[in-house]
Length: 343
Ligand code: UT7
View 1 (cartoon, rainbow, N blue to C red):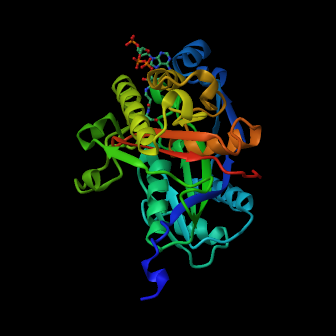
View 2 (spheres, protein in one colour; view 1 turned 90 degrees about the vertical axis):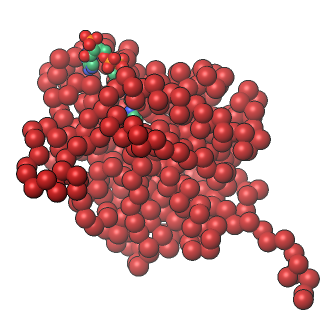
């Protein structure tokens, strides 16, 4: 046997090589919502931290947001090619087929493998784990991971507890094969779920459960429903515990080893509670919820792209990501932010 046959194999990991974000141009302020809903600007600001959000215009779909974010991530990576496209979304363009193949086609990515994953607001973390696994197995060399949601298309505009929070946007990252010691290498990803609480966040109609009944859905069943207060409690608990597990797997101490926390932008009060429990002060927490609201799965990559552009996130920062959403599903991971340009 040759000497190289005995050499330890270098573990292939996924390394972030590009990042991009996109929000549709239409901005909806709290004051505009007060003309349609029994709410106030003050209630929304103090209970959620949201001041304004972006909303798709009529006819715009998730793929339109995903293509823009994906294009920007590819430009950021400096290379317009990938062999796999993964799209995390709760609002696919159609129930069938998946939206990712159309996104890959519109981005001119040839016959790249393309599929959707569904993990609601934890979609980017589930997507990172999926991309990392494909790269580690040698199935993929370069993955475009996009998380995009036209969330307002499933929100009941008359439901004041959800219409004030959820919004539209997309974020994306290019991941290439690399080694664990490189900046951008995705750390171990912690994932979890609790399907016994699926009814906390749900769109009751439109799936096989309702369609197999053979009768039209009851009014409002096609809209997203959330038991807000219970969801809030689980969001704080799960994002905190997943973040602790991910940091421990990386051997990082909360007090000294984390430069930035990028948590799913669910609600500013949830973000504060998670950061306080973790012992991470406000200066180390990235946040854009005031301007974009809760953009579902898009939340974290959109935040990373914006923070890279603004300079709040720079090369060398040790970053902790944590997310939670319907399912229930959650995830967390760590990485050292690489030197990226944004477009
Ligand atoms: O993205 C991942 C999953 N989602 C989340 O993590 C979101 C988690 N939940 C939340 O962010 C919060 O629960 C909400 C923002 C949805 C609601 O805030 P809250 O402080 O938990 O309010 P609440 O649901 O406990 O409601 C308190 C009161 C209720 O009135 P009563 O029953 O006390 O008279 C609601 O009817 O506030 C009322 N309310 C509102 N009032 C004015 C609910 N929504 C509004 C509103 N404007 N928009």
